Amino acid sequence: MNILIEWLGILGRWAHVLFAITWIGTSFYFNWLDLSERKPKAPTLKPNVEGEVHEMHGGSFYYHERFWPTGDNPRTLAHSGPAQFTFLTGLFLVAYFYWRGPSVYLIPPGSALTVVEAVILSGLALLLPWLIYHQTCKRVQSDTAVLCAMAVVVTVASFVLTRVFNPPAAFVHVGAMLGTIMAANVQYVIIPNHIRMRRQVQAGQEVDLTFHKLAKRRSQHNNYMTLPVLFGMLSAHFPLATSSELSWAILVLVMAALFTLRHYRNVQLRTDRKPRALLGLAGALLACGIGLSFVPRTAAVEDRSALSAADARIHDIVQTRCAVCHATTPSFDGFTVAPNGVHLETMAEIEVRKDQIMTLAIASDLMPPGNLTEMTDAERRELADWLAARGAVTLDLE
Ligand code: HEC
Image 1 (spheres, helix red, strand yellow):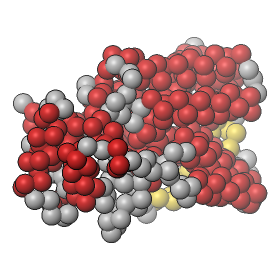
Image 2 (cartoon, protein in one colour):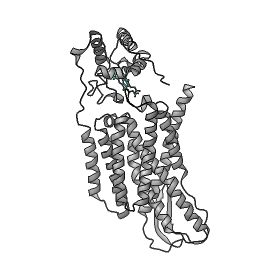
Image 3 (cartoon, protein in one colour):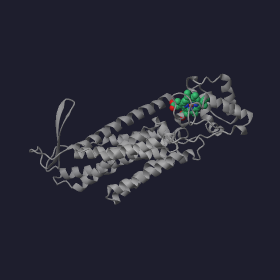
Image 4 (cartoon, helix red, strand yellow):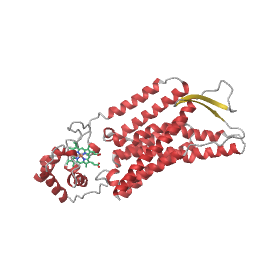
């Protein structure tokens, strides 16, 4: 059964990435099409042509016209399925990794949050930003004002979530809240307006451009959110960024840099000029984010003189066999930051992870990996007794 559940996670991730690249690929393509089109110079196939594009791909020539339909038109296809499937598979993954086992991935050991509170907070983190964004868009016409509101939302969410959740989970949540906004834009604004426009065309009426403008605005917002979302989603692979004490600021700065990079590209496509100032700004924001990861992390130091002989012995074992990697500044070759953000430098840090240590170093020999630090069986037994005396239990690893 556990093996089948594991496969569900594997297939869920695969499907999520597949739907996401299909959705974003199409969305990037149409954004490129819109910005690359130019006014036609010669007679066009359709009436009311706003712009045309000639392109080549995969050994073929293509010709597109963007037009406002009049009268009878062949069936018009829409692109929407992948957005909803990306959201649904994403929600499945949040539930699978964070809501099903929140004590492992979502909240750090020793967290004041109960499992139920953590799950509610996780759900709110996905839902609330959409409500704020949607209401702001409905009330405010200026996109700059919407951007400012969202910058505040992202900053507050990054700050709060990196404090209550494991930092990698916090990064994924900030990415997922923007992803939720994108999918909700498709579902609740873009598609309904497409349907309205299609009905008008079918009824032989002129298309009401207000519907076009509503859909176009949200589609543009989605385009700008894409690069930041990707950064949030992949953060489980960036321990350098997530383990910093300033991880929230790194997340905000990198997201701002990627947003600016997207703007640079869009302006470039629309005008055929390279707005170097925007590229410079994106570079500067990224450099600030990278710079913050150089800020030395303050290591918690154990006051060994206050330890009992038994505790000092355990501290010794863990420092030589584990903390060479699991430290603020690891000494083991090839490690720049504590793996998975797990620090084992003080007795408090060790005690808070007692169940994980019992599971990985006693019930199994997963840690130290490949027994690289040559932990002896006698040391494992000593550690096991100490952990058992503190009520440590073996976790279900699945
Ligand atoms: C050579 C470096 C190294 C040493 C030594 C080492 N670890 Fe790890 N540890 C890692 C790496 C790498 C990971 C991340 C593994 C992964 O995500 O698959 C990890 C992950 C962990 C985790 C987190 C698991 C999770 O699911 O997040 C714990 C807890 C842990 N180690 C405990 C220990 C203990 C206890 C020791 C000593 C008995 C130890 N480690 C020694 C490299 C090391």
